[in-house]
Length: 279
Image 1 (cartoon, rainbow, N blue to C red):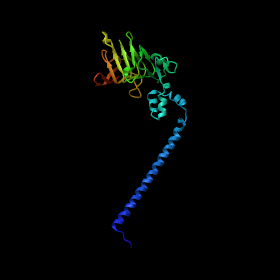
Image 2 (image 1 turned 90 degrees about the vertical axis):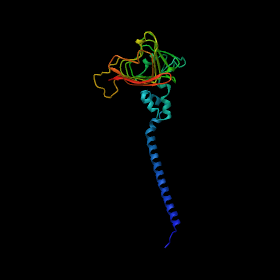
Image 3 (image 1 turned 180 degrees about the vertical axis):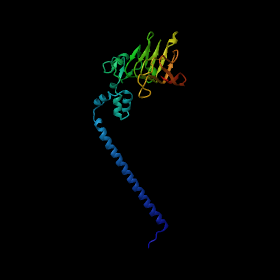
Image 4 (image 1 turned 135 degrees about the vertical axis):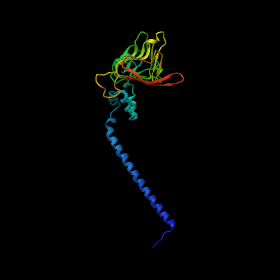
Protein backbone atom coordinates (compact mmCIF):
# COMPACT_ATOMS: atom_id res chain seq x y z
CA UNK A 1 0.00 0.00 0.00
CA UNK A 2 1.45 3.39 -1.07
CA UNK A 3 1.29 6.37 1.21
CA UNK A 4 1.68 9.98 0.13
CA UNK A 5 3.37 12.59 2.16
CA UNK A 6 1.37 15.58 3.31
CA UNK A 7 3.07 17.85 0.77
CA UNK A 8 2.33 15.44 -2.09
CA UNK A 9 -1.38 15.30 -1.15
CA UNK A 10 -1.59 19.07 -1.20
CA UNK A 11 0.01 19.19 -4.64
CA UNK A 12 -2.36 16.52 -6.02
CA UNK A 13 -5.40 18.32 -4.57
CA UNK A 14 -4.22 21.64 -5.98
CA UNK A 15 -3.76 20.09 -9.43
CA UNK A 16 -7.24 18.58 -9.37
CA UNK A 17 -8.81 21.90 -8.31
CA UNK A 18 -6.89 23.70 -11.06
CA UNK A 19 -8.05 21.18 -13.68
CA UNK A 20 -11.65 21.52 -12.49
CA UNK A 21 -11.48 25.33 -12.65
CA UNK A 22 -10.03 25.20 -16.16
CA UNK A 23 -12.77 22.83 -17.31
CA UNK A 24 -15.47 25.07 -15.88
CA UNK A 25 -13.92 28.14 -17.47
CA UNK A 26 -13.75 26.35 -20.83
CA UNK A 27 -17.36 25.22 -20.59
CA UNK A 28 -18.45 28.75 -19.65
CA UNK A 29 -16.46 30.23 -22.53
CA UNK A 30 -17.95 27.77 -25.01
CA UNK A 31 -21.44 28.55 -23.72
CA UNK A 32 -20.88 32.31 -24.08
CA UNK A 33 -19.52 31.86 -27.60
CA UNK A 34 -22.54 29.77 -28.60
CA UNK A 35 -24.97 32.33 -27.13
CA UNK A 36 -23.26 35.24 -28.89
CA UNK A 37 -23.14 33.30 -32.16
CA UNK A 38 -26.82 32.42 -31.89
CA UNK A 39 -27.71 36.03 -31.09
CA UNK A 40 -25.57 37.30 -33.97
CA UNK A 41 -27.16 34.84 -36.36
CA UNK A 42 -30.62 35.79 -35.17
CA UNK A 43 -29.83 39.51 -35.47
CA UNK A 44 -28.28 39.05 -38.89
CA UNK A 45 -31.24 37.09 -40.14
CA UNK A 46 -33.68 39.66 -38.80
CA UNK A 47 -31.74 42.78 -39.75
CA UNK A 48 -30.18 41.85 -43.08
CA UNK A 49 -33.25 42.50 -45.29
CA UNK A 50 -33.52 46.20 -44.38
CA UNK A 51 -29.76 46.73 -44.12
CA UNK A 52 -29.39 45.44 -47.66
CA UNK A 53 -31.39 48.43 -48.97
CA UNK A 54 -29.44 51.34 -50.42
CA UNK A 55 -29.29 54.77 -48.78
CA UNK A 56 -31.86 56.34 -51.10
CA UNK A 57 -34.45 53.66 -50.35
CA UNK A 58 -33.86 53.88 -46.60
CA UNK A 59 -34.19 57.66 -46.65
CA UNK A 60 -37.49 57.34 -48.52
CA UNK A 61 -38.76 55.00 -45.78
CA UNK A 62 -37.51 57.31 -43.02
CA UNK A 63 -39.32 60.26 -44.62
CA UNK A 64 -42.66 58.73 -43.59
CA UNK A 65 -41.67 58.75 -39.89
CA UNK A 66 -42.40 61.67 -37.60
CA UNK A 67 -39.17 63.49 -36.71
CA UNK A 68 -39.97 63.48 -33.00
CA UNK A 69 -39.71 60.92 -31.54
CA UNK A 70 -39.50 58.29 -34.33
CA UNK A 71 -36.52 59.60 -36.30
CA UNK A 72 -34.64 60.38 -33.12
CA UNK A 73 -35.24 56.79 -31.97
CA UNK A 74 -34.03 55.10 -35.14
CA UNK A 75 -30.93 57.32 -35.14
CA UNK A 76 -29.74 55.19 -32.21
CA UNK A 77 -29.75 51.96 -34.24
CA UNK A 78 -26.38 52.38 -35.95
CA UNK A 79 -24.00 54.98 -37.36
CA UNK A 80 -25.36 54.60 -40.92
CA UNK A 81 -28.96 55.20 -39.87
CA UNK A 82 -27.93 58.21 -37.83
CA UNK A 83 -26.22 59.78 -40.84
CA UNK A 84 -29.27 59.14 -43.02
CA UNK A 85 -31.74 60.50 -40.46
CA UNK A 86 -29.68 63.70 -40.09
CA UNK A 87 -29.48 64.23 -43.87
CA UNK A 88 -30.82 67.67 -44.94
CA UNK A 89 -33.26 66.02 -47.38
CA UNK A 90 -35.36 64.77 -44.45
CA UNK A 91 -35.82 68.23 -42.91
CA UNK A 92 -37.57 71.33 -44.19
CA UNK A 93 -35.22 74.30 -43.95
CA UNK A 94 -35.76 78.04 -43.84
CA UNK A 95 -32.80 79.84 -45.44
CA UNK A 96 -32.24 83.06 -47.34
CA UNK A 97 -29.24 81.68 -49.18
CA UNK A 98 -29.65 81.86 -52.95
CA UNK A 99 -27.14 79.01 -53.31
CA UNK A 100 -29.44 76.54 -51.52
CA UNK A 101 -32.77 77.89 -52.78
CA UNK A 102 -33.01 75.35 -55.59
CA UNK A 103 -32.70 72.38 -53.25
CA UNK A 104 -35.88 70.49 -52.32
CA UNK A 105 -37.21 71.32 -48.88
CA UNK A 106 -35.54 74.77 -48.68
CA UNK A 107 -37.81 77.82 -48.28
CA UNK A 108 -37.09 81.57 -48.13
CA UNK A 109 -39.32 82.20 -45.08
CA UNK A 110 -41.05 80.39 -42.25
CA UNK A 111 -44.59 80.94 -43.56
CA UNK A 112 -43.77 79.21 -46.86
CA UNK A 113 -42.17 76.27 -45.04
CA UNK A 114 -45.19 75.83 -42.74
CA UNK A 115 -47.56 75.98 -45.72
CA UNK A 116 -45.62 73.22 -47.55
CA UNK A 117 -45.01 71.03 -44.50
CA UNK A 118 -46.84 67.77 -43.87
CA UNK A 119 -48.23 66.86 -40.43
CA UNK A 120 -45.35 65.67 -38.26
CA UNK A 121 -42.60 67.48 -40.23
CA UNK A 122 -39.70 69.30 -38.58
CA UNK A 123 -38.64 72.73 -39.82
CA UNK A 124 -35.04 73.77 -39.21
CA UNK A 125 -34.68 77.56 -39.15
CA UNK A 126 -31.26 78.88 -40.14
CA UNK A 127 -29.44 81.04 -37.56
CA UNK A 128 -28.06 84.52 -38.07
CA UNK A 129 -30.87 85.72 -40.33
CA UNK A 130 -33.73 88.20 -39.90
CA UNK A 131 -36.83 85.99 -39.72
CA UNK A 132 -40.15 87.84 -39.66
CA UNK A 133 -43.09 86.02 -38.06
CA UNK A 134 -46.40 87.87 -37.90
CA UNK A 135 -49.72 86.11 -37.22
CA UNK A 136 -48.53 82.80 -38.73
CA UNK A 137 -51.15 80.12 -38.09
CA UNK A 138 -50.06 76.52 -37.55
CA UNK A 139 -52.95 74.08 -38.00
CA UNK A 140 -50.99 70.80 -38.17
CA UNK A 141 -48.55 69.02 -35.85
CA UNK A 142 -45.09 70.46 -36.50
CA UNK A 143 -41.76 70.92 -34.78
CA UNK A 144 -39.83 74.17 -35.19
CA UNK A 145 -36.12 74.06 -34.32
CA UNK A 146 -33.58 76.87 -34.30
CA UNK A 147 -30.43 75.89 -36.17
CA UNK A 148 -28.00 77.83 -33.99
CA UNK A 149 -25.93 76.72 -31.05
CA UNK A 150 -27.95 78.95 -28.69
CA UNK A 151 -31.58 80.16 -28.81
CA UNK A 152 -30.63 83.79 -29.49
CA UNK A 153 -28.77 82.70 -32.64
CA UNK A 154 -32.15 82.21 -34.36
CA UNK A 155 -34.57 85.11 -33.85
CA UNK A 156 -38.20 85.38 -34.98
CA UNK A 157 -39.49 88.95 -34.83
CA UNK A 158 -43.14 89.93 -34.58
CA UNK A 159 -43.57 93.55 -35.68
CA UNK A 160 -45.83 96.10 -34.04
CA UNK A 161 -49.45 95.81 -35.11
CA UNK A 162 -49.53 92.00 -35.19
CA UNK A 163 -51.45 90.00 -32.60
CA UNK A 164 -48.78 87.31 -32.27
CA UNK A 165 -45.73 85.83 -33.93
CA UNK A 166 -47.09 82.26 -34.06
CA UNK A 167 -50.64 81.04 -33.53
CA UNK A 168 -51.06 77.35 -32.67
CA UNK A 169 -54.21 75.37 -33.44
CA UNK A 170 -52.60 71.92 -33.24
CA UNK A 171 -50.10 69.97 -31.17
CA UNK A 172 -46.66 71.45 -31.83
CA UNK A 173 -43.19 71.82 -30.37
CA UNK A 174 -40.71 74.68 -30.61
CA UNK A 175 -37.15 74.51 -29.37
CA UNK A 176 -33.91 76.54 -29.44
CA UNK A 177 -35.60 79.71 -30.73
CA UNK A 178 -35.77 83.32 -29.63
CA UNK A 179 -39.14 84.92 -30.33
CA UNK A 180 -39.39 88.68 -29.93
CA UNK A 181 -42.66 90.66 -29.99
CA UNK A 182 -42.71 94.45 -30.24
CA UNK A 183 -46.33 94.54 -29.11
CA UNK A 184 -48.86 91.77 -28.52
CA UNK A 185 -47.72 88.25 -27.66
CA UNK A 186 -44.95 85.93 -28.77
CA UNK A 187 -47.06 82.77 -28.86
CA UNK A 188 -50.84 82.49 -29.11
CA UNK A 189 -52.16 79.06 -28.10
CA UNK A 190 -55.67 78.25 -29.39
CA UNK A 191 -55.82 74.44 -29.08
CA UNK A 192 -53.70 71.29 -28.93
CA UNK A 193 -50.62 70.67 -26.84
CA UNK A 194 -47.81 73.17 -27.21
CA UNK A 195 -44.32 72.32 -25.94
CA UNK A 196 -41.76 75.11 -25.55
CA UNK A 197 -38.26 73.92 -24.74
CA UNK A 198 -34.97 75.79 -24.47
CA UNK A 199 -36.34 79.04 -25.93
CA UNK A 200 -36.29 82.77 -25.19
CA UNK A 201 -39.61 84.64 -25.25
CA UNK A 202 -39.16 88.39 -25.16
CA UNK A 203 -41.68 91.24 -25.16
CA UNK A 204 -39.94 94.53 -25.84
CA UNK A 205 -40.44 97.40 -23.42
CA UNK A 206 -42.95 100.04 -24.51
CA UNK A 207 -45.65 102.28 -22.94
CA UNK A 208 -48.26 99.61 -23.70
CA UNK A 209 -46.49 96.86 -21.78
CA UNK A 210 -49.74 95.91 -20.06
CA UNK A 211 -51.00 94.62 -23.45
CA UNK A 212 -47.98 92.38 -24.04
CA UNK A 213 -47.68 88.75 -22.94
CA UNK A 214 -45.02 86.21 -23.93
CA UNK A 215 -47.65 83.43 -23.93
CA UNK A 216 -51.41 83.77 -24.40
CA UNK A 217 -53.79 80.80 -24.25
CA UNK A 218 -57.45 80.90 -25.21
CA UNK A 219 -57.90 77.11 -25.14
CA UNK A 220 -60.81 75.81 -23.07
CA UNK A 221 -59.37 72.37 -22.39
CA UNK A 222 -62.91 70.92 -22.45
CA UNK A 223 -63.80 68.08 -24.81
CA UNK A 224 -67.13 66.50 -25.64
CA UNK A 225 -65.59 63.07 -25.05
CA UNK A 226 -63.10 62.15 -22.31
CA UNK A 227 -59.48 61.86 -23.45
CA UNK A 228 -58.30 58.20 -23.54
CA UNK A 229 -54.79 59.19 -22.45
CA UNK A 230 -54.16 61.69 -19.71
CA UNK A 231 -52.23 64.74 -20.90
CA UNK A 232 -53.48 64.53 -24.51
CA UNK A 233 -55.87 67.48 -24.16
CA UNK A 234 -55.15 71.17 -24.63
CA UNK A 235 -52.23 72.60 -22.70
CA UNK A 236 -48.84 74.30 -22.72
CA UNK A 237 -45.61 72.84 -21.34
CA UNK A 238 -42.62 75.12 -20.84
CA UNK A 239 -39.14 73.80 -20.02
CA UNK A 240 -35.79 75.58 -19.58
CA UNK A 241 -37.09 78.79 -21.16
CA UNK A 242 -36.23 82.43 -20.51
CA UNK A 243 -39.20 84.79 -20.36
CA UNK A 244 -38.57 88.54 -20.47
CA UNK A 245 -40.90 91.55 -20.46
CA UNK A 246 -44.67 91.78 -20.76
CA UNK A 247 -47.34 92.28 -18.13
CA UNK A 248 -46.97 88.64 -17.00
CA UNK A 249 -45.53 85.42 -18.39
CA UNK A 250 -48.85 83.74 -19.24
CA UNK A 251 -52.32 85.10 -19.88
CA UNK A 252 -55.28 82.70 -20.14
CA UNK A 253 -58.91 83.30 -21.03
CA UNK A 254 -60.16 79.70 -21.10
CA UNK A 255 -60.28 76.95 -18.48
CA UNK A 256 -56.51 76.43 -18.36
CA UNK A 257 -54.46 77.69 -15.42
CA UNK A 258 -50.79 78.00 -14.55
CA UNK A 259 -49.46 74.97 -12.65
CA UNK A 260 -46.23 73.45 -11.28
CA UNK A 261 -44.05 76.52 -11.67
CA UNK A 262 -40.30 76.17 -11.14
CA UNK A 263 -37.59 78.76 -11.74
CA UNK A 264 -33.80 78.65 -11.70
CA UNK A 265 -31.87 81.90 -11.33
CA UNK A 266 -28.58 82.34 -13.18
CA UNK A 267 -26.26 85.34 -13.23
CA UNK A 268 -27.94 87.01 -16.18
CA UNK A 269 -31.42 85.51 -16.50
CA UNK A 270 -34.16 83.30 -15.07
CA UNK A 271 -35.13 79.95 -16.59
CA UNK A 272 -38.71 78.73 -16.17
CA UNK A 273 -40.43 75.35 -16.09
CA UNK A 274 -44.24 75.28 -15.83
CA UNK A 275 -47.46 73.93 -17.32
CA UNK A 276 -50.70 75.53 -18.39
CA UNK A 277 -53.38 72.89 -18.05
CA UNK A 278 -56.91 72.25 -16.90
CA UNK A 279 -57.28 72.16 -13.14
